[in-house]
Image 1 (cartoon, rainbow, N blue to C red):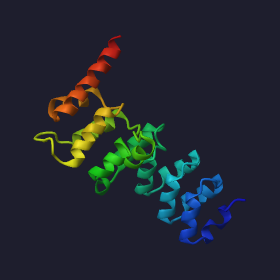
Image 2: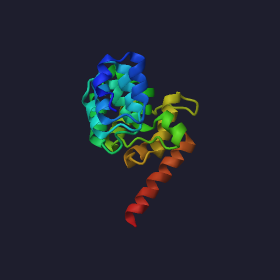
Image 3: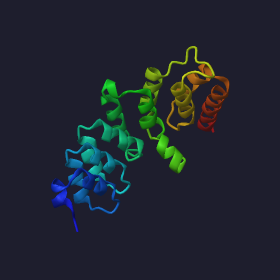
Image 4: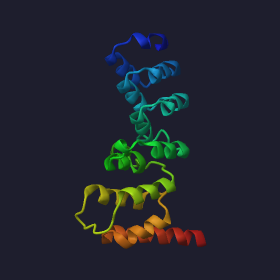
Length: 193
């Protein structure tokens, strides 16, 4: 049974419940994705069973929060061009450091639940995040939380460029700097083998 023809008659709580349901059909998912109630669309973005056409609909929509949720839950990991377009089109008011870290480097909630949480952000975007959000000059061992955490995540991220790793190795506090240099040298050695 499809609920698609009834979505427009549902209350907000019914929409949220339906958006969270992993067993709804694609037509119902599409109707929720097109519905004006933002919270229902946000819950739909977190639904692990949404189809690619629903993801396309949500990425094409206007709601930046939906696009960022799709990125942070890993739904766009195989679509680097979409991640690039979302980052580059993101309005300035949405570029808070915590959001950049959570949506483009490593998802905090996914990291806690499945142990990975790494987002397949393209290298050029990671370079841009490093340039625009991380200022390592004068960073101490107990510096700002975002900088410390973002640097550690960048060092562990498989798409971080060697240029950024070398820059971190020269500027970050010692344990992180040593790890960045080690990873950059291992990559170099693997390329030469």
